[in-house]
Image (tube, rainbow, N blue to C red; front, side, top):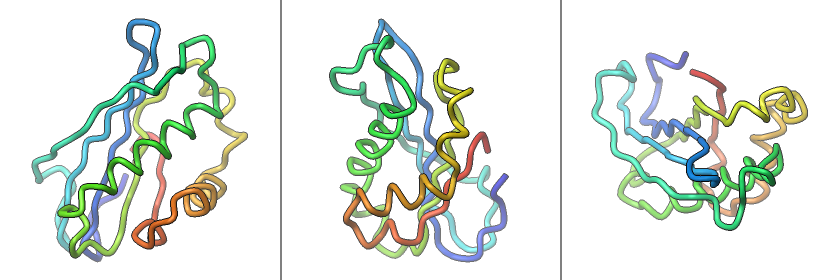
Length: 132
């Protein structure tokens, strides 16, 4: 669990789920000042469905694509990142059928993958965690 941050940080909690035979993704986000407890701050969020991906097609590849898509949308919220020095992505829910395949994507590899795919300097100070 991530607490007592040392710098101004944006925390994105990613929740991916199945609804009406489609894959949905929510990102709840908060900004935190140094030393604040993550759970004392209000959050806002955004939601979308992974375009053109049915539950049958959904696998470890698609959840990474969905994560990239979500982060790109998330980064359009310039006011969130005006003076933030770090982005923490906490993946707190994934459709259960891919959990056995998660070892194919160690956290370090996901961070490298995201930094290569998303061409935005704000993502260079990125931390990924699973299930908070």
